[in-house]
Image (cartoon, rainbow, N blue to C red; front, side, top):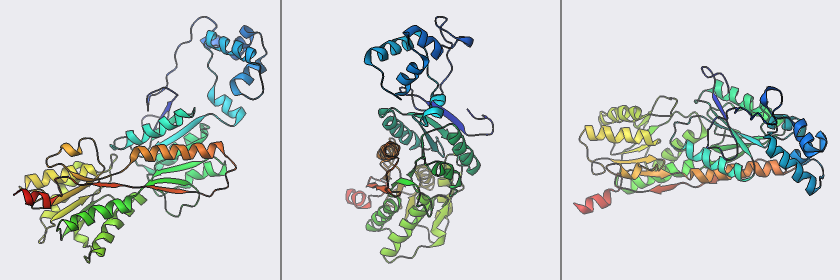
Length: 383
């Protein structure tokens, strides 16, 4: 684990361990223990009546060993409690069966789903996982990337937190695969990407608000630090222009970045600012679900009816979104599908090192879920 006070948290997850659990050293049993209490490969060899080289061959699968001999060695491993050093095996075989996963924050509500789906797919193929949370800081992202590389992971899954991809070149120079998740990086020609359809998701949300009769649609935006944010902003503007509307700078409010992305406070404060305009909006699209919650709170405080006075659409269909009052319309991302596909793409690269196919980009569609917060036609019909 890296320095807790100044560096990204790095956790290692073995097969069968819960996502994000830190592996701890357990005291070895007295029986069969070597120096310091840890069973050794020499003890396994002596117990099974074979050479150290044969034990190594059974563990690493480097040459043929008869079924009877392999059974004796495996029985001795179980009896002594010997655990092969995964890193040392990697140094000799060039593989550790470990994959690194980098994410900009674990506070995002989508992060656990993405991490678990990717880890489950990797475990199903016999890989362990080393995880790091980079807190959306460029310096931590670089340091965590270098740590993963120095730890001999076979490949890397990462959600880019910044536009700086130079640290990833460590992997490309060593011919170790990297797959980007959720969004890509600008001018990328080197790394596979499994991304969310951010442009379409934003375009569909704004088009829906226009269909509901909205004429002044505001945007609660994230800082355009990654392609996800840039594409969502572009989708908003394109939908307006497609309907003959002109994007107005005063209707685009950008929050300040934080470790958790954007907070409810951002949504609350920016909504109050929008509603103080001489010509306030009659619809708001929030690029972040927490911002949408803050938006609804501000509108309630202002005693504005949703959606009759102002319609609201958020982004990311979280488990509690439909239980808000009113239930929140939202753009749903297929987060678990993105994690699974990214892991499978990395596994394919690892299993076929000579794959001549250039970097690929897969876009997983979003889905607009319409609920009471934006469905003006249904609400007006009820009156």
